[in-house]
View 1 (cartoon, rainbow, N blue to C red):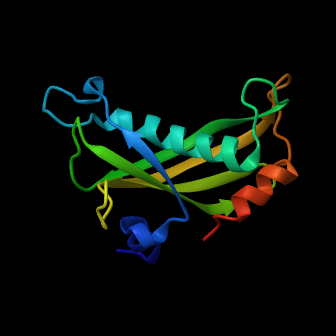
View 2: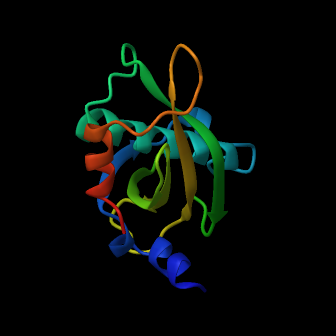
View 3: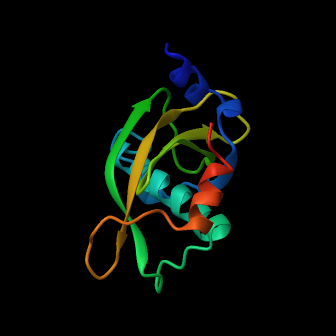
Length: 146
């Protein structure tokens, strides 16, 4: 296991946490949260952080984040009606992009049930052209940089 993976696997590898309540519809026919749902968890925790800590106004700001890449490793199943914690950190920041590291933990668990990466490129809403990350958002991202 690489050092980055080892950090991704444990709660100590993350700087910000957000609660997630699983929903009945998250479960698949096998009785656990379907793999595609984890990506919605990733999207939710990253955007919650940007809204709460970076003052992103998703409805009105001229700059928005587009997802351009994502990955996930699944370690143990979770299922409705479990409560989860989503851990967030920043792995890398560029001029216009950021790669987050996100871990999904059963409430109180030390080891992640799943973890992965999620990359945003910040763009001008009207032109879809990449732009520099705004200062307030960059500051919030740097606060959770590993």
